[in-house]
Image (cartoon, rainbow, N blue to C red):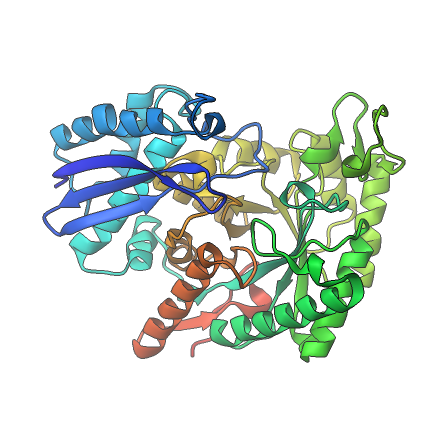
Length: 447
């Protein structure tokens, strides 16, 4: 039974306020910290901010905190819910209490914090790890799967100050046998890359971005991928590492004429666009050329969130592997159903704060899996030291996860948690494996 639910304002990895929720039961006190995104989809659940410019530039979350302390918490305690059995009911009750389709009244950041903390309390009440609790909540029956981590090591878009339009260039150690080996491969490659950037551009460009990646003075995706290719070769992992790209293309899409401005960060004063504007067809040709030249099994948000026609055409005519919808889907079952009917993509990025409750995130993942799609668990650029998504990825057997570079405490917290989970599975008699090359549709080979 929930004895007390309260919230407080804390800071995320960008130094902005976020919500921390603390749930007390007979089994102890359980906390959760809510992440926040910079590149956010228009269809995401609403993150409630105070908009008081005198404090934190208007980014305070005291209103959301108050909603937990004065509305959500007392109502949940009064209902007498069991954290062990009633997570679905708790999440459903909070949605009804909010009464809006996007959690705009109480705030998705308030509701999600409670949902995450209740999940932790439920795991403790059942005396099982969080990943096992989430696995049972999701009805997952496949053997345990430790995900392939996709490390964002080169930054662009809204995450950096360079001229690169694409937001993330990721390396994925798909050829590793365990996540322990995979993290070692990525870490070694990351440090080689850092030295390469210092040698090529100067040490000033080895500063890191919001997600721990580097942002050297490059503007073209080929430049980024060539750097990664060289770094991986020098580290000795050429045949064991693949790439992923998150274009975050909604950020440079012009809805008026349907074009994409790859030079949007380099527009000269007094001009409305850069000299590198592409049509959707030209974007498709660009992606096709990159896929043919580099080992890229995953593309995320190659088109804008409402450019359905381009998504569908690309998925049909240029299908190559995993086409991930982030802003397109926002972890929302209704958006997933639309995408399925239009055959727009074949994978969903799972961000729990996009939808606002653990139960809804699990339901979205279950729907996506039933369609034969991939599920790609993700952090946010404004992260915290909360490692919840590591357990979520293992619990739902998603096969892959991204949580930034192998650098910065809030990113490494997730990778360290995955190492802990892998160690637990090694010491157990449970069948498990590392997803490896089969990350999109994990197939178990027992270790």
